Amino acid sequence: MSYPLKTEHLSIPSTPDQLEVIDNVVEAMAADMGFDKDALADLGICVTEAVMNAIEHAHRDQPDLFIDLTIECYADRMKITVRDHGPGFDEDAVPDPTTPQNVLNLGGRGLMLMRAMMDEVEVRPHDDGTEISMVKKLVNSKK
Amino acid sequence: MKIESHEHGDAQVIYLKGKVMGGPESAEFQNLLKKAVADGKKKVVIDLGEVEWMNSSGIGLLVSAFTTVKNSGGELKIARTTEKIESLLVITKLNSVFETYPDVISAVASYK
Image (cartoon, rainbow over all chains, first blue to last red):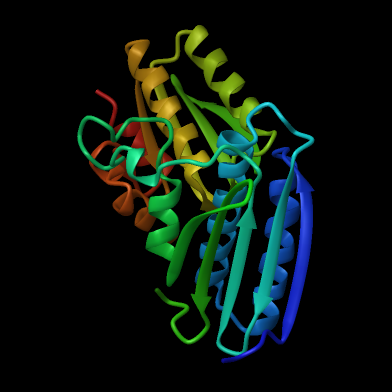
């Protein structure tokens, strides 16, 4: 079992202007760890994806609800946990956005992108919402 | 994200720059596109050469733009996709929807 070398906890309101702030924090911490440019992009995409998911789907029209983020830097990986306080969602109910009938849907690609770009993604319910945790490995940053 | 727009002959070329993540500036892009369509533009090119990355909100913006232009009888094409954007289009299978070109000139020239 290993422990994080550095941990950052953030609570942000559910407003889109927070996306850039969160991206800046995550990419700066990841750059310090040695992630390459391509992996920094993956981390930026995925953390803004998870936060946007909380803003648009979990906390819809409730900007005062806070989203809690934990960013953990280990020697060999970064782990990001995004926790919302919404009604939760059924991942299996999201239609496959790559089928011909869905490919022009405006949304529904977030989790697919996270699973394609991160090494581990877990979606689980907690006491009053949903928690998404994702891991990007430093040694495998070209995934 | 930063947005610029220029006319290139009878085509409207919209340049996106930076990180396209669905922030407050998304409305600026949507308004620009609506204006181009309202002005009767049938040829719309989105230049992505200066885009670092885009998340699914950014991809949704592109899809929305594609549909808006198509529904008005026009055609939207994409110029200068980076390696990162190419991989996103492949993952989402939108590479089967969007016509992509190496530069704005060839995108504009491709209209019949």
